[in-house]
Length: 254
Ligand SMILES: CC(C)(COP(=O)(O)OP(=O)(O)OC[C@H]1O[C@@H](n2cnc3c(N)ncnc32)[C@H](O)[C@@H]1OP(=O)(O)O)[C@@H](O)C(=O)NCCC(=O)NCCS
Image 1 (spheres, rainbow, N blue to C red):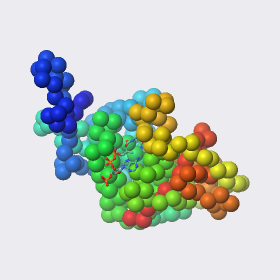
Image 2: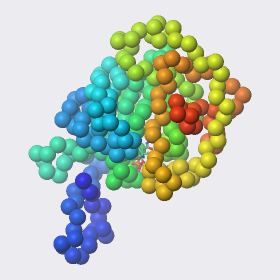
Image 3: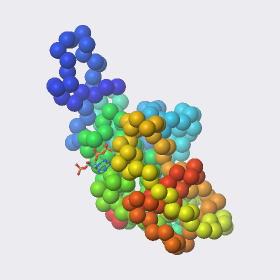
């Protein structure tokens, strides 16, 4: 689907006009859990896979686990210009409960449709999910990022400690069982981020395909008890994901 952003993008030759859908308006957006809109699951899988390619089956499986008991996948939706058609999936974010922090949620797989970035939809998605979490009694959000730390810092997130996201709802897997898994013995050495400005250029950077989203910490390890000798700052981090890529932990009180 292509979106028009204004008359400046139109060519004069009507034969060369691309088939366009008017860009969604910020005022008409809604945020809904994907399990309340199962008919939009395919479109959501396409949106996420456009950023982080993965098998469709596994993406749909992951989306299919969304429930009110968490993890929960939220869709940022815009009404389709044709009233009868399904809404346009503008963005996605996944929320999970956090071990030992009943008032926290872990935010993952934050993505806005490629053609719609830079127009305020990412802010709307983050502010919307903060409202969503707050009205359900949560008070803090945590996330990891490879290369969007300035976006999140701009929205009020600051560097924080690692947490353990729960891939199952706490009703399905008792916390006492999760606590029985061993803790990671020591923090990783710090990893320098080669070039923040180059990485912040995002998926269109000519340096290669975008990094996949940070993998959640495995259930068999927990974050180190202390931050260790290496402070996390905006240029270096002591944390890595399972692929060894540097990640920054961020959090925000809501
Ligand atoms: C990151 C992402 C969700 C941002 O969405 P977006 O729609 O482009 O962001 P917005 O246009 O809403 O930007 C919101 C604000 O953040 C600012 N901003 C956006 N990217 C920024 C960056 N890299 N550094 C600093 N500020 C940034 C904007 O200037 C804007 O400021 P304003 O609201 O005060 O005017 C989007 O670019 C995306 O999907 N990227 C690919 C997937 C990804 O990397 N997700 C993060 C995984 S951790």
